[in-house]
Structure formats: C-alpha cells, structure tokens
Amino acid sequence: MKKLMTILVLFAMCGVAMAAGSGTPYDLTMKKDRQGHKIATTHDYTNANGTTALEYTVTFNNKDKQSSTSNYISQLYFTTKNETLQEGEILAVQFMGAEISNHGGDMSKFDVLDYGIYLYDPTTKQHTSEYMSIGANDNYFAIGPNQTFGVYYKNKQGEFITSTENYVANYDGDNHEITIYSETVNGVTTDYPDGKKVITSKRYMCMLEENEFVHPHWEFMLQTTIDNPYYGVNPSEFQGNGSTEVPNTTGQPLPGTLATLLIGSLCASALRKKNQK
Image (cartoon, rainbow, N blue to C red; front, side, top):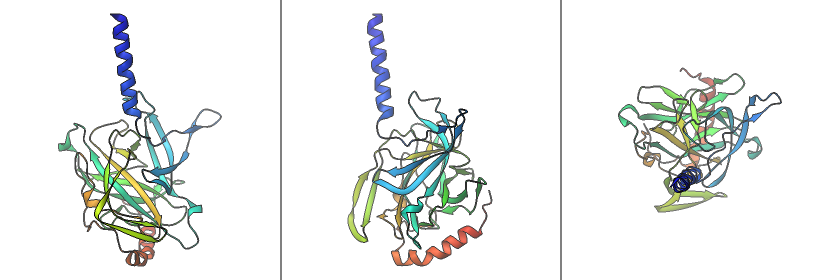
C-alpha cells in the first residue's frame, strides 16, 4: 500500500511539473557577482511570433513561494536594441495583447482602468516621462534607440502598478488568442478582412501588485517594429477571464503617415514631462 501511495504521489508531482512547465516562460533569473550578490541581468524579449527589437533587464527577483518550478517574481524594465535601428529610425512599441487573469480570484476588488508605458532611467531609477496610455496613443509608442521604459497599469483604486516598482512574474498557465487584422513584412502589408487567429503559446508576462503570485492579476505581451505598426490589432478586444478598459481609443492602429507625423511631438512631449506618481 505504501508503495502504491508513493507511486501515486510521484505521478501527481510529475503532472503538476508538466502543467506548470508547459510553454516557454520568460527568463527572470539573475546572474551573481564573485561575492554571490545578484546583479542586474539582461535577456532578449521574444513573443509568440518570434524575435522583437527589445530586451529586458531584471533588477530584482525572488523564487515564487507558491511554485515548485523555476518561476520568479521580479522587477524589470525594457530597452530598445540600439543595433536594430539605423540613424533617424524610430521603433514602434505596441501591445500585442493584454488581459486580466482571474482563475477564481475576487474580481470585486480588482479592475484595470488603464495601461501603457513610461520612459525610465535605470541609473537614477526614476521615471523620465508621464504615464503614456494605450488609449491616448492609439497603441503606438514611438521609442528611440537605446531607450528604456517600463510597463504600467492603473488599478481600481487609481494606483499605478509598474514593472519597475511593483512586480512581474513569468508564471502563466493559459493560452491566449489574438485576432490579427493586418500584417506588415518588409514594407508590404497584408490585410485580413475576417481576422487571423494567432495563439500566443503562453508568452505573456504577469503584472502583480505584491511580491507574491496572486489572482486575479493583469497580463501583457509587447510587439515592436521600425517606423510603422507591424500587426494590426484591436486593443478593445484584449480580454481574458475579466476585462481590460481601453479609454479614449478607436482600437485601431494609426495609419503609417499619421503615425510618422506624430513621432516627433510624442517623443518631445514624453521627454519634457516628469511623471507625477
């Protein structure tokens, strides 16, 4: 009987490990110096559709107490790869997807009123721009070479939860389906009138308010391209077990010409304004 119980326990443990390890979680590990202290560690940022022009730097992490696998809770910021851009080129950062993950959590205490990015200085550890809403910017953020930024969302209490001051996790147990309306490759755009379904294969990052894994929480995935949006997506359709508000937006990416005209003013405005937290 004891042998049978042992076998059953081992099977159960293997099942949990396989479920938690399915997909490819983001690497939130950190290197250590000679004294054994953790140091900021940079990783390439890819999503379900492959390589992006972003990398992310983990500045803090700890092992998820609720997980028996290699899952972490961390703080991080993103950087545009300098070698990706030619002189004068601008990188467009977009949200490929975003949603609230419920999984039985108390939704009466949780909601996402807004989300987007903010420019960030890793040396001073300070915001260098206001919060730039996905709605106000039509899901189009023009970022220069070697520029760093964080991701944020605004919760039901009006608090700004950020990737540099709050927490990001790499544990994500759901597949995510996103509708693609257009796709640009090498300057050639293909339209999909009826939409094109893409499964993101668990390539979301989880945003948490606390230094432990909790439900419900907010999840996101980014996409980048040079000068013009690469994927035509509709942020108003981003959802999940809950819903995510997209204030003041038509839900469609800006046309390339209009977006190009706005790049200069967006960057100048973002750099002039200091974030008020």
